[in-house]
Length: 318
Image 1 (cartoon, rainbow, N blue to C red):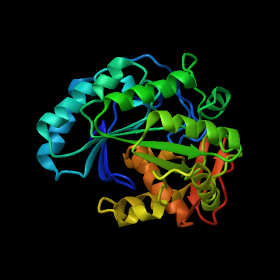
Image 2: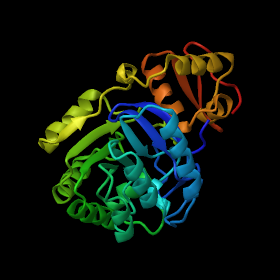
Image 3: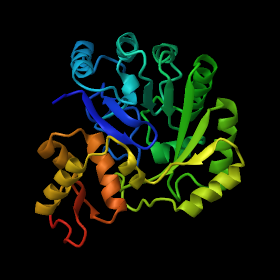
């Protein structure tokens, strides 16, 4: 069992994706209202070696010698991976030992205004940053950033990275109705896209409950309306979660273990992590599928979002 690697997990965009986690849960520069990993416990822009380089590469070395190659090696996980000052060194290690496997980095993009961060990511093949707002007060409302961050610096960092990075940039925009879908919001985002020039703009919405009440997912029709509003050729709506079942890394035994555990008692994602020994991102991938298939239901309680078998009563006490 690895501590800093997880999966391969069934990724809608990256196939069989081996995850590399470089920060503890939940160290991040944002505290997004929709985050599936949970509330940010350390809101910071401080970069340091949160997870030691040697520990990560020891696990990678073991994995490479004992497992088939995944489709991607993906830096993501419990928080913002670019907060780790050794991310560039770990990417370099992967490129030296497995040059045939593409490297992806899932990042919120807030630290790309730092020239050092941009240089550390230069050897990756695909960067998947997010940008949910291009207006400061909307940025603060939906992403709840660390105090030092402004949306102007955020966008400028993405622009500078586009100018320097030879690989692909797939920019994700997550829409929460009532938060960032007004005409002014969408116009400001389109203006930002024109500066950033991403290869792809991937429009997404909630798969499951976030960390605040009264959030709802945008409907397919609402997302299509946004696509029509922007009138851009490189916008796509992210595929539905059940399509993960078509990916080779989707494990029926993992699905069964999660369902069996929830059947005994309602659980939070963190409960499932502790009981099943899975990574939080891996748990979330399977919960997405199970909820879309109406096998489970979610209830927001004081201690977090609890999942129970569809038809069960929600937990009485958080």
